[in-house]
Image 1 (cartoon, chains in turn orange, red):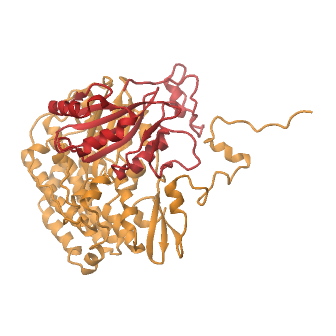
Image 2 (cartoon, chains in turn blue, orange):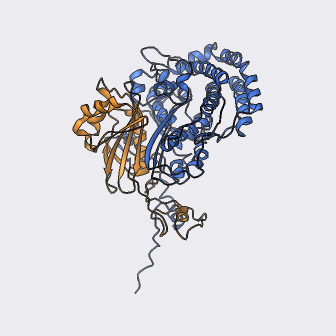
Image 3 (cartoon, chains in turn orange, cyan):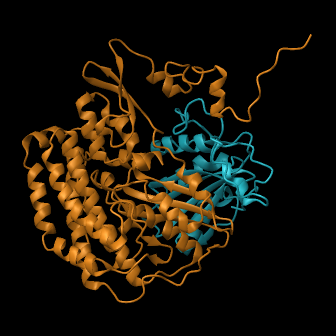
Length: 412
Length: 182
């Protein structure tokens, strides 16, 4: 008598074909499955009068595709558990299997509202590996375009912030501001969002006439337009009362939680990579690092106001760049095929959201052996759980929006 | 390159360093054993001459033979980035102490390294997968996790198996084994 036929063994349990073997359901466990960690056990145990509420993954105020499991008691949030991975595309693995030039376009869509900064950090890391000296004009162009995009990103933040609290008007106006910047950059790079403009050793093309006329046009009224946008919200009593006092981050907590960027400066720590570890031509430029928050830390309103302060500083930087732009080439002489010597390099830039860093290990081939991306939004999203304890459900969006996360970067 | 940082590190950490302090461009690198990690980081954070207050990054690395965890720190006392490498973690059972007692913000980064490399951070109270689904079993960023078209890089390769919807963990006979001395 023969033994019953065994089902064919597949090489990996991750093989989606396994689902065809009538095992559908086995792989679709959702909580409550047996808890895997101490924290999960604690979170998925309901107390008296508590219930779970799923916010997302399609919720409009999660800035992408994020699911947050809220544990609520009445209108109060007791605890929450963000579930990531809906936008995960394995960008680190992709980059480890692409050559050095190709990575620039792979990494662009991480933080899609400020993608030049996503190009800047890896390009700087590769330049360190290759010992390349970037022409000064290229560095000035990088700073100029980068700061323009920072303003565009902060403008969008201002609109989002209001939208998440239920105000529709500001986003219409902040999109005017953003659109002018993005159109100017499109005249320079050919793209509105994913610019793919920085190159290892410089930038893709020199400034052209249309870009310069658009920038000149926009700069002539940038400050006025910015002040007008501020007037829409800052005087609004509903907005201010709603934001004041929620989501307080103090100095010590910000440092221990690894917070960077505007969020740590709003908690009273003057940490800005542009000044803390200067790169590019930032040491030559004059600008202040705005800091807000009292000794008890900063709340959501502080984080909102700080970004508005930063816009003014960015306009100052752009003004200096335009006046002091040197002549010369925009690309160093580079080989087509890059094979850096084996070594390691870390480079970090100040993106509109904070410290964006890359760590690259080269093994001497044309592809990096290890390519690590550190995204600030990923770290900041951890704060939401701590900040939301014993707050109202409706404030979750306000607090989350004030941290300004972008899910593309968080999920990588 | 900050030469004084090198002497400071050698004086403070002394026998806890497993190799020489390496410096290149704006980065200083030290290597420590997993057992010493917490003590080293505490010294770096608390010592008034070092004061590395900002944790810039936590990540895992697969060198092809063994695993590493890498930490990047920033301090106001030096113009350099400091990189701490914990190396020589065995592939079968990589274990390293969690630094969430010092920087609670490292929790998710450690979860990510666990998800991608299978490195177990002892003391992290929420060590579950963060990107991949909970029933996932392999570690995608390890070097023995080959992409479907990796065989194109080998001799006789060149065909992208687009119709193959999964990533074979074992690799094919043509896949190249990459290692690095990192």
